[in-house]
Image (cartoon, rainbow, N blue to C red; front, top):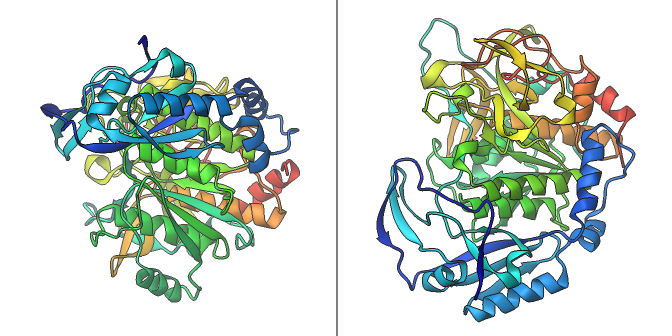
Length: 522
Protein backbone atom coordinates (compact mmCIF):
# COMPACT_ATOMS: atom_id res chain seq x y z
CA UNK A 1 0.00 0.00 0.00
CA UNK A 2 1.42 3.37 -1.05
CA UNK A 3 1.68 5.84 1.86
CA UNK A 4 2.14 9.59 1.38
CA UNK A 5 3.20 12.25 3.89
CA UNK A 6 0.51 14.58 5.20
CA UNK A 7 1.95 18.06 4.79
CA UNK A 8 2.19 20.08 8.00
CA UNK A 9 1.78 17.08 10.30
CA UNK A 10 5.41 17.01 11.43
CA UNK A 11 5.95 17.09 15.19
CA UNK A 12 9.04 17.35 17.34
CA UNK A 13 9.23 16.58 21.06
CA UNK A 14 8.07 19.33 23.40
CA UNK A 15 10.82 21.54 24.80
CA UNK A 16 12.80 19.55 27.35
CA UNK A 17 10.90 16.32 26.69
CA UNK A 18 12.62 12.97 26.34
CA UNK A 19 11.25 9.61 25.18
CA UNK A 20 10.79 7.09 27.98
CA UNK A 21 9.02 4.13 26.36
CA UNK A 22 7.07 3.04 23.33
CA UNK A 23 3.34 3.46 23.83
CA UNK A 24 1.53 0.28 24.89
CA UNK A 25 0.30 -1.35 21.66
CA UNK A 26 -3.02 -2.13 23.35
CA UNK A 27 -3.63 1.41 24.65
CA UNK A 28 -6.86 2.79 23.18
CA UNK A 29 -7.29 6.33 21.87
CA UNK A 30 -9.47 8.44 19.64
CA UNK A 31 -8.21 10.47 16.69
CA UNK A 32 -10.00 13.29 14.83
CA UNK A 33 -9.70 13.62 11.05
CA UNK A 34 -10.58 16.87 9.27
CA UNK A 35 -11.67 16.41 5.67
CA UNK A 36 -11.27 18.74 2.72
CA UNK A 37 -13.92 21.31 1.86
CA UNK A 38 -15.92 20.67 -1.31
CA UNK A 39 -16.09 24.41 -2.02
CA UNK A 40 -12.84 25.73 -0.59
CA UNK A 41 -12.35 28.24 -3.40
CA UNK A 42 -15.78 29.80 -2.93
CA UNK A 43 -15.24 30.12 0.81
CA UNK A 44 -11.81 31.65 0.32
CA UNK A 45 -13.19 34.19 -2.15
CA UNK A 46 -15.91 35.17 0.32
CA UNK A 47 -13.37 35.53 3.13
CA UNK A 48 -11.06 37.65 0.98
CA UNK A 49 -13.90 40.03 0.14
CA UNK A 50 -14.74 40.53 3.79
CA UNK A 51 -11.10 40.91 4.81
CA UNK A 52 -10.74 43.58 2.12
CA UNK A 53 -13.64 45.50 3.70
CA UNK A 54 -16.44 44.42 1.33
CA UNK A 55 -19.51 43.67 3.47
CA UNK A 56 -21.97 43.16 0.60
CA UNK A 57 -22.16 39.37 1.16
CA UNK A 58 -24.81 38.39 3.67
CA UNK A 59 -23.78 35.90 6.32
CA UNK A 60 -24.47 32.26 5.58
CA UNK A 61 -26.81 30.37 7.86
CA UNK A 62 -25.42 27.24 9.45
CA UNK A 63 -27.80 25.18 7.32
CA UNK A 64 -26.55 26.87 4.14
CA UNK A 65 -22.96 26.30 5.17
CA UNK A 66 -23.60 22.61 5.84
CA UNK A 67 -25.23 22.14 2.44
CA UNK A 68 -22.43 23.87 0.51
CA UNK A 69 -19.29 23.33 2.57
CA UNK A 70 -20.00 20.16 4.55
CA UNK A 71 -18.10 16.93 3.98
CA UNK A 72 -18.62 15.17 0.67
CA UNK A 73 -20.39 11.79 0.99
CA UNK A 74 -17.69 10.08 -1.07
CA UNK A 75 -14.98 11.46 1.23
CA UNK A 76 -16.82 10.13 4.27
CA UNK A 77 -17.24 6.76 2.59
CA UNK A 78 -13.54 6.60 1.70
CA UNK A 79 -12.55 7.33 5.31
CA UNK A 80 -14.91 4.63 6.57
CA UNK A 81 -13.30 2.13 4.20
CA UNK A 82 -9.81 3.25 5.26
CA UNK A 83 -10.75 2.84 8.94
CA UNK A 84 -12.21 -0.62 8.42
CA UNK A 85 -9.07 -1.71 6.58
CA UNK A 86 -7.00 -1.04 9.70
CA UNK A 87 -9.56 -2.28 12.23
CA UNK A 88 -10.44 1.24 13.40
CA UNK A 89 -13.99 2.12 14.48
CA UNK A 90 -15.81 5.24 13.35
CA UNK A 91 -17.29 6.69 16.54
CA UNK A 92 -18.49 10.04 15.16
CA UNK A 93 -19.10 11.77 11.85
CA UNK A 94 -20.05 15.43 11.60
CA UNK A 95 -20.74 16.67 8.10
CA UNK A 96 -20.74 20.47 8.65
CA UNK A 97 -17.47 20.27 10.62
CA UNK A 98 -16.06 17.78 8.06
CA UNK A 99 -14.89 15.76 11.04
CA UNK A 100 -14.58 12.02 11.59
CA UNK A 101 -13.48 10.52 14.92
CA UNK A 102 -11.81 7.11 14.84
CA UNK A 103 -11.19 4.78 17.77
CA UNK A 104 -8.58 2.05 18.00
CA UNK A 105 -5.38 0.86 19.63
CA UNK A 106 -1.89 2.29 19.46
CA UNK A 107 -0.83 -0.64 17.27
CA UNK A 108 -3.66 0.02 14.82
CA UNK A 109 -2.97 3.75 14.61
CA UNK A 110 0.79 3.17 14.26
CA UNK A 111 0.10 1.08 11.18
CA UNK A 112 -2.72 3.25 9.76
CA UNK A 113 -0.67 6.47 9.91
CA UNK A 114 2.88 5.05 9.67
CA UNK A 115 3.99 6.46 13.02
CA UNK A 116 5.59 5.12 16.18
CA UNK A 117 3.67 6.44 19.16
CA UNK A 118 5.92 7.00 22.16
CA UNK A 119 5.52 8.25 25.72
CA UNK A 120 7.60 11.32 26.58
CA UNK A 121 8.56 12.82 29.94
CA UNK A 122 8.52 16.61 30.29
CA UNK A 123 8.12 19.24 32.99
CA UNK A 124 4.32 18.90 33.04
CA UNK A 125 4.35 15.11 33.31
CA UNK A 126 4.08 12.67 30.44
CA UNK A 127 2.37 12.70 27.08
CA UNK A 128 1.95 10.43 24.10
CA UNK A 129 3.38 11.65 20.82
CA UNK A 130 5.34 10.91 17.70
CA UNK A 131 8.36 12.36 15.94
CA UNK A 132 8.18 13.27 12.29
CA UNK A 133 5.21 13.34 9.95
CA UNK A 134 1.97 11.38 9.62
CA UNK A 135 1.38 9.42 6.42
CA UNK A 136 -1.86 8.35 4.74
CA UNK A 137 -2.71 5.80 2.05
CA UNK A 138 -3.32 7.15 -1.46
CA UNK A 139 -7.05 6.41 -1.18
CA UNK A 140 -7.57 9.10 1.47
CA UNK A 141 -4.49 11.29 1.19
CA UNK A 142 -6.19 14.01 -0.87
CA UNK A 143 -9.38 13.80 1.16
CA UNK A 144 -7.91 14.30 4.67
CA UNK A 145 -6.28 17.65 5.53
CA UNK A 146 -5.58 17.09 9.22
CA UNK A 147 -5.11 14.27 11.74
CA UNK A 148 -5.27 15.17 15.44
CA UNK A 149 -5.11 13.20 18.67
CA UNK A 150 -2.17 10.90 18.08
CA UNK A 151 -0.15 13.46 20.06
CA UNK A 152 -1.84 14.44 23.33
CA UNK A 153 0.67 16.91 24.79
CA UNK A 154 -0.84 19.96 26.55
CA UNK A 155 -1.28 22.40 23.68
CA UNK A 156 -2.32 25.68 25.27
CA UNK A 157 -2.17 27.72 28.43
CA UNK A 158 -4.87 29.88 30.02
CA UNK A 159 -4.01 33.57 29.83
CA UNK A 160 -4.99 34.80 33.28
CA UNK A 161 -2.93 36.12 36.18
CA UNK A 162 -3.90 36.17 39.84
CA UNK A 163 -3.10 39.40 41.65
CA UNK A 164 0.21 39.20 43.50
CA UNK A 165 1.59 41.45 46.26
CA UNK A 166 2.66 44.78 44.80
CA UNK A 167 6.40 45.39 44.48
CA UNK A 168 6.06 49.18 44.30
CA UNK A 169 4.09 51.88 46.06
CA UNK A 170 1.31 52.04 43.49
CA UNK A 171 -2.01 51.28 45.18
CA UNK A 172 -3.85 48.27 43.80
CA UNK A 173 -7.32 48.70 42.35
CA UNK A 174 -10.02 46.37 41.12
CA UNK A 175 -13.23 46.62 39.16
CA UNK A 176 -16.40 44.68 38.64
CA UNK A 177 -17.19 43.88 35.03
CA UNK A 178 -20.10 46.39 34.97
CA UNK A 179 -17.77 49.11 36.29
CA UNK A 180 -15.34 48.48 33.42
CA UNK A 181 -18.20 48.45 30.93
CA UNK A 182 -19.17 51.91 32.21
CA UNK A 183 -15.59 53.17 32.07
CA UNK A 184 -15.36 51.98 28.48
CA UNK A 185 -18.67 53.69 27.66
CA UNK A 186 -20.49 50.53 26.63
CA UNK A 187 -23.87 51.46 25.16
CA UNK A 188 -27.07 50.16 26.70
CA UNK A 189 -27.98 46.55 26.12
CA UNK A 190 -27.99 43.18 27.81
CA UNK A 191 -27.11 40.73 25.04
CA UNK A 192 -30.65 39.37 25.05
CA UNK A 193 -31.21 36.85 22.27
CA UNK A 194 -27.48 36.24 21.72
CA UNK A 195 -25.35 33.24 22.61
CA UNK A 196 -21.71 33.65 23.63
CA UNK A 197 -19.54 30.55 23.23
CA UNK A 198 -16.65 30.12 25.66
CA UNK A 199 -13.85 27.63 24.93
CA UNK A 200 -12.32 25.89 27.97
CA UNK A 201 -9.56 23.27 28.01
CA UNK A 202 -9.81 22.23 31.64
CA UNK A 203 -11.32 23.15 34.98
CA UNK A 204 -14.92 24.01 35.61
CA UNK A 205 -17.49 26.16 37.35
CA UNK A 206 -19.52 25.66 40.50
CA UNK A 207 -23.09 26.93 40.48
CA UNK A 208 -22.85 28.04 44.12
CA UNK A 209 -19.94 30.37 43.25
CA UNK A 210 -21.82 31.82 40.29
CA UNK A 211 -24.92 32.36 42.43
CA UNK A 212 -22.92 34.26 45.04
CA UNK A 213 -20.99 36.29 42.45
CA UNK A 214 -24.05 37.47 40.54
CA UNK A 215 -26.09 38.03 43.73
CA UNK A 216 -23.39 40.43 44.93
CA UNK A 217 -23.87 42.39 41.69
CA UNK A 218 -27.65 42.32 42.09
CA UNK A 219 -28.03 40.11 39.00
CA UNK A 220 -29.54 36.75 38.19
CA UNK A 221 -27.23 33.96 37.09
CA UNK A 222 -27.39 33.84 33.28
CA UNK A 223 -28.35 30.72 31.37
CA UNK A 224 -25.24 28.53 31.08
CA UNK A 225 -24.91 25.27 29.16
CA UNK A 226 -21.85 23.06 29.73
CA UNK A 227 -21.09 21.13 26.54
CA UNK A 228 -18.78 18.11 26.44
CA UNK A 229 -16.32 17.81 23.55
CA UNK A 230 -14.02 14.77 23.16
CA UNK A 231 -15.04 13.58 26.65
CA UNK A 232 -14.10 16.90 28.27
CA UNK A 233 -16.51 18.08 30.96
CA UNK A 234 -17.24 20.71 33.55
CA UNK A 235 -14.85 19.50 36.24
CA UNK A 236 -13.84 22.04 38.91
CA UNK A 237 -10.46 21.15 40.38
CA UNK A 238 -10.79 23.17 43.58
CA UNK A 239 -7.63 25.12 42.74
CA UNK A 240 -8.35 28.78 41.88
CA UNK A 241 -4.82 29.11 40.48
CA UNK A 242 -5.51 26.34 37.99
CA UNK A 243 -7.96 26.22 35.08
CA UNK A 244 -10.93 26.94 37.38
CA UNK A 245 -9.66 30.52 37.55
CA UNK A 246 -9.91 30.75 33.77
CA UNK A 247 -13.38 29.25 33.55
CA UNK A 248 -14.86 31.45 36.26
CA UNK A 249 -13.15 34.60 34.96
CA UNK A 250 -14.57 34.04 31.47
CA UNK A 251 -18.11 33.29 32.59
CA UNK A 252 -18.31 36.00 35.24
CA UNK A 253 -16.94 38.82 33.09
CA UNK A 254 -19.02 37.99 30.04
CA UNK A 255 -22.08 37.12 32.12
CA UNK A 256 -22.00 40.34 34.14
CA UNK A 257 -21.48 42.45 31.00
CA UNK A 258 -24.11 40.76 28.80
CA UNK A 259 -26.40 39.37 31.54
CA UNK A 260 -29.29 38.30 29.32
CA UNK A 261 -27.19 36.46 26.77
CA UNK A 262 -27.05 32.69 26.81
CA UNK A 263 -23.66 31.09 27.47
CA UNK A 264 -22.46 27.85 25.93
CA UNK A 265 -19.24 26.64 27.56
CA UNK A 266 -17.41 24.00 25.51
CA UNK A 267 -15.17 21.79 27.66
CA UNK A 268 -12.49 19.81 25.83
CA UNK A 269 -9.13 18.18 26.64
CA UNK A 270 -6.09 20.45 26.44
CA UNK A 271 -4.68 18.94 23.24
CA UNK A 272 -4.59 20.18 19.67
CA UNK A 273 -7.45 17.78 18.87
CA UNK A 274 -9.49 19.04 21.82
CA UNK A 275 -8.88 22.70 20.97
CA UNK A 276 -9.81 22.27 17.30
CA UNK A 277 -12.86 20.12 18.06
CA UNK A 278 -14.13 22.58 20.70
CA UNK A 279 -13.84 25.54 18.32
CA UNK A 280 -15.46 23.77 15.38
CA UNK A 281 -18.22 22.40 17.62
CA UNK A 282 -19.01 25.93 18.79
CA UNK A 283 -18.93 27.40 15.28
CA UNK A 284 -21.26 24.76 13.85
CA UNK A 285 -23.53 24.33 16.89
CA UNK A 286 -27.03 24.34 15.39
CA UNK A 287 -28.66 24.13 18.82
CA UNK A 288 -27.06 27.04 20.70
CA UNK A 289 -26.04 29.03 17.58
CA UNK A 290 -23.44 31.33 19.15
CA UNK A 291 -22.84 34.68 17.46
CA UNK A 292 -19.63 35.38 19.42
CA UNK A 293 -16.82 33.10 20.61
CA UNK A 294 -14.43 33.95 23.44
CA UNK A 295 -11.07 32.12 23.59
CA UNK A 296 -8.66 32.76 26.47
CA UNK A 297 -6.24 29.90 25.77
CA UNK A 298 -3.27 29.76 23.43
CA UNK A 299 0.40 29.08 22.94
CA UNK A 300 3.36 30.50 21.06
CA UNK A 301 3.20 29.89 17.32
CA UNK A 302 6.39 27.82 17.60
CA UNK A 303 4.60 25.26 19.80
CA UNK A 304 1.96 24.38 17.18
CA UNK A 305 2.13 22.04 14.23
CA UNK A 306 1.47 23.62 10.85
CA UNK A 307 -1.62 21.45 10.30
CA UNK A 308 -3.13 22.46 13.65
CA UNK A 309 -2.71 26.16 12.91
CA UNK A 310 -4.14 25.66 9.43
CA UNK A 311 -7.15 23.75 10.79
CA UNK A 312 -7.97 26.40 13.39
CA UNK A 313 -7.46 29.25 10.95
CA UNK A 314 -9.78 27.46 8.52
CA UNK A 315 -12.37 27.19 11.29
CA UNK A 316 -12.11 30.92 11.94
CA UNK A 317 -12.69 31.59 8.25
CA UNK A 318 -15.84 29.50 8.51
CA UNK A 319 -16.91 31.57 11.53
CA UNK A 320 -16.35 34.71 9.45
CA UNK A 321 -18.65 33.37 6.71
CA UNK A 322 -21.33 32.64 9.33
CA UNK A 323 -21.07 36.09 10.92
CA UNK A 324 -19.55 34.78 14.16
CA UNK A 325 -17.07 37.14 15.84
CA UNK A 326 -14.11 35.35 17.45
CA UNK A 327 -12.31 37.19 20.30
CA UNK A 328 -8.94 35.72 21.38
CA UNK A 329 -6.55 36.65 24.20
CA UNK A 330 -3.10 37.66 22.95
CA UNK A 331 -1.12 36.21 25.89
CA UNK A 332 0.40 37.37 29.16
CA UNK A 333 4.13 37.12 28.53
CA UNK A 334 4.90 40.22 26.51
CA UNK A 335 6.89 40.19 23.29
CA UNK A 336 8.57 36.84 24.07
CA UNK A 337 5.30 35.00 24.69
CA UNK A 338 7.20 33.11 27.38
CA UNK A 339 9.33 31.06 24.96
CA UNK A 340 12.65 31.97 26.59
CA UNK A 341 14.91 31.84 23.54
CA UNK A 342 15.58 35.59 23.52
CA UNK A 343 13.47 36.12 20.41
CA UNK A 344 10.08 37.68 19.75
CA UNK A 345 7.02 35.43 19.54
CA UNK A 346 3.28 35.90 19.26
CA UNK A 347 0.50 33.72 20.58
CA UNK A 348 -1.75 31.53 18.47
CA UNK A 349 -4.71 31.48 17.84
CA UNK A 350 -4.58 35.24 18.47
CA UNK A 351 -2.23 35.56 15.49
CA UNK A 352 -4.82 34.22 13.05
CA UNK A 353 -5.83 37.11 10.76
CA UNK A 354 -9.46 35.98 11.04
CA UNK A 355 -9.92 36.70 14.76
CA UNK A 356 -10.04 39.80 16.93
CA UNK A 357 -6.81 39.59 18.97
CA UNK A 358 -7.18 41.16 22.42
CA UNK A 359 -4.18 42.70 24.22
CA UNK A 360 -3.77 44.18 27.68
CA UNK A 361 -3.58 47.52 29.49
CA UNK A 362 -3.25 48.84 33.02
CA UNK A 363 -6.15 51.14 33.88
CA UNK A 364 -6.61 53.66 36.66
CA UNK A 365 -9.91 55.42 37.25
CA UNK A 366 -11.01 58.52 39.14
CA UNK A 367 -14.57 59.78 39.72
CA UNK A 368 -16.04 57.22 37.34
CA UNK A 369 -13.72 58.12 34.45
CA UNK A 370 -10.50 56.65 33.08
CA UNK A 371 -7.64 58.63 34.64
CA UNK A 372 -4.72 56.82 32.96
CA UNK A 373 -4.37 53.79 30.74
CA UNK A 374 -1.02 52.37 29.63
CA UNK A 375 0.40 49.12 28.29
CA UNK A 376 0.20 46.35 30.88
CA UNK A 377 3.75 45.34 31.80
CA UNK A 378 4.59 44.15 35.29
CA UNK A 379 7.90 42.62 34.22
CA UNK A 380 8.86 38.98 34.02
CA UNK A 381 7.21 37.96 37.28
CA UNK A 382 3.97 39.88 36.90
CA UNK A 383 3.30 39.47 33.18
CA UNK A 384 2.75 41.76 30.23
CA UNK A 385 0.31 41.97 27.35
CA UNK A 386 1.23 39.71 24.45
CA UNK A 387 1.89 41.24 21.06
CA UNK A 388 4.26 41.38 18.15
CA UNK A 389 4.57 40.16 14.59
CA UNK A 390 3.52 36.71 13.38
CA UNK A 391 6.10 34.38 11.88
CA UNK A 392 3.35 32.43 10.09
CA UNK A 393 0.54 34.64 8.78
CA UNK A 394 0.89 37.27 6.07
CA UNK A 395 -0.13 40.88 6.57
CA UNK A 396 -3.93 41.06 6.16
CA UNK A 397 -5.36 43.73 3.87
CA UNK A 398 -6.50 45.89 6.77
CA UNK A 399 -2.94 46.10 8.17
CA UNK A 400 -1.23 46.94 4.87
CA UNK A 401 1.14 49.88 5.16
CA UNK A 402 1.24 49.99 8.95
CA UNK A 403 4.53 50.57 10.79
CA UNK A 404 5.52 48.63 13.89
CA UNK A 405 7.40 50.46 16.65
CA UNK A 406 9.97 48.63 18.75
CA UNK A 407 12.78 49.57 21.08
CA UNK A 408 15.09 49.23 18.05
CA UNK A 409 13.11 51.70 15.94
CA UNK A 410 10.14 51.77 13.59
CA UNK A 411 9.90 49.46 10.57
CA UNK A 412 7.17 48.44 8.11
CA UNK A 413 4.87 45.68 9.29
CA UNK A 414 5.78 42.64 7.15
CA UNK A 415 3.52 39.95 8.68
CA UNK A 416 0.30 39.86 10.69
CA UNK A 417 0.53 42.23 13.65
CA UNK A 418 -0.89 41.32 17.08
CA UNK A 419 -3.08 42.46 18.86
CA UNK A 420 -5.98 44.31 17.21
CA UNK A 421 -7.62 45.77 20.33
CA UNK A 422 -7.03 45.82 24.07
CA UNK A 423 -8.63 46.24 27.47
CA UNK A 424 -7.74 46.26 31.16
CA UNK A 425 -5.60 43.18 31.92
CA UNK A 426 -3.24 44.19 34.72
CA UNK A 427 -3.93 42.05 37.83
CA UNK A 428 -3.04 45.14 39.92
CA UNK A 429 -6.02 46.88 38.31
CA UNK A 430 -7.93 43.66 37.73
CA UNK A 431 -11.37 42.13 37.87
CA UNK A 432 -13.35 41.13 40.97
CA UNK A 433 -14.31 37.47 40.60
CA UNK A 434 -15.27 34.48 42.70
CA UNK A 435 -13.47 31.16 42.24
CA UNK A 436 -13.69 27.92 44.25
CA UNK A 437 -15.42 29.50 47.22
CA UNK A 438 -13.27 32.62 47.51
CA UNK A 439 -13.34 36.17 46.18
CA UNK A 440 -10.27 37.09 44.15
CA UNK A 441 -8.86 39.68 41.77
CA UNK A 442 -7.67 38.35 38.42
CA UNK A 443 -6.18 39.94 35.34
CA UNK A 444 -4.52 38.81 32.14
CA UNK A 445 -5.62 39.10 28.53
CA UNK A 446 -7.99 36.24 29.38
CA UNK A 447 -10.17 38.93 30.88
CA UNK A 448 -10.12 41.05 27.73
CA UNK A 449 -11.46 38.42 25.32
CA UNK A 450 -14.74 37.83 27.23
CA UNK A 451 -15.13 41.59 27.83
CA UNK A 452 -14.95 42.25 24.08
CA UNK A 453 -17.16 39.22 23.38
CA UNK A 454 -19.82 40.61 25.70
CA UNK A 455 -19.60 44.04 24.03
CA UNK A 456 -20.11 42.46 20.60
CA UNK A 457 -23.07 40.45 21.92
CA UNK A 458 -24.66 43.62 23.30
CA UNK A 459 -24.17 45.40 19.98
CA UNK A 460 -25.57 42.42 18.06
CA UNK A 461 -28.62 42.31 20.31
CA UNK A 462 -29.35 46.02 20.08
CA UNK A 463 -28.88 46.16 16.31
CA UNK A 464 -30.72 42.86 15.77
CA UNK A 465 -27.95 41.68 13.50
CA UNK A 466 -24.58 39.92 13.53
CA UNK A 467 -21.59 42.22 13.27
CA UNK A 468 -19.33 39.30 12.45
CA UNK A 469 -15.79 40.12 11.39
CA UNK A 470 -15.15 43.73 12.44
CA UNK A 471 -11.37 44.05 11.97
CA UNK A 472 -11.56 45.65 8.52
CA UNK A 473 -13.78 48.46 9.75
CA UNK A 474 -11.85 49.04 12.96
CA UNK A 475 -8.69 49.66 10.97
CA UNK A 476 -10.44 51.68 8.24
CA UNK A 477 -12.21 54.09 10.60
CA UNK A 478 -9.51 55.31 12.93
CA UNK A 479 -10.55 56.98 16.14
CA UNK A 480 -13.23 54.47 17.13
CA UNK A 481 -11.19 53.28 20.13
CA UNK A 482 -9.22 54.81 22.99
CA UNK A 483 -5.66 54.97 21.62
CA UNK A 484 -3.00 53.85 24.12
CA UNK A 485 0.33 55.58 23.54
CA UNK A 486 2.38 54.93 26.69
CA UNK A 487 4.36 51.82 27.65
CA UNK A 488 5.93 48.71 26.17
CA UNK A 489 5.46 44.95 26.36
CA UNK A 490 9.17 44.21 26.11
CA UNK A 491 10.51 44.71 22.61
CA UNK A 492 7.51 46.65 21.26
CA UNK A 493 6.35 50.11 22.30
CA UNK A 494 3.03 51.90 22.23
CA UNK A 495 2.58 54.71 19.71
CA UNK A 496 -0.23 56.77 18.25
CA UNK A 497 -2.38 54.52 16.05
CA UNK A 498 -1.89 50.77 15.88
CA UNK A 499 0.95 49.22 17.83
CA UNK A 500 2.07 45.71 18.77
CA UNK A 501 1.20 46.24 22.45
CA UNK A 502 -2.44 47.36 22.52
CA UNK A 503 -3.46 47.29 18.86
CA UNK A 504 -5.82 50.11 17.96
CA UNK A 505 -6.74 50.66 21.61
CA UNK A 506 -9.43 49.96 24.17
CA UNK A 507 -13.21 50.12 23.75
CA UNK A 508 -15.24 53.25 23.34
CA UNK A 509 -18.51 51.43 23.14
CA UNK A 510 -20.75 54.26 22.01
CA UNK A 511 -18.47 55.30 19.14
CA UNK A 512 -18.05 51.69 18.13
CA UNK A 513 -21.79 51.01 18.16
CA UNK A 514 -22.50 53.99 15.96
CA UNK A 515 -19.85 53.07 13.39
CA UNK A 516 -20.60 49.35 13.20
CA UNK A 517 -24.36 49.86 12.96
CA UNK A 518 -23.89 51.72 9.67
CA UNK A 519 -22.34 48.73 7.92
CA UNK A 520 -23.76 45.66 9.66
CA UNK A 521 -24.52 42.59 7.52
CA UNK A 522 -27.54 40.47 8.30
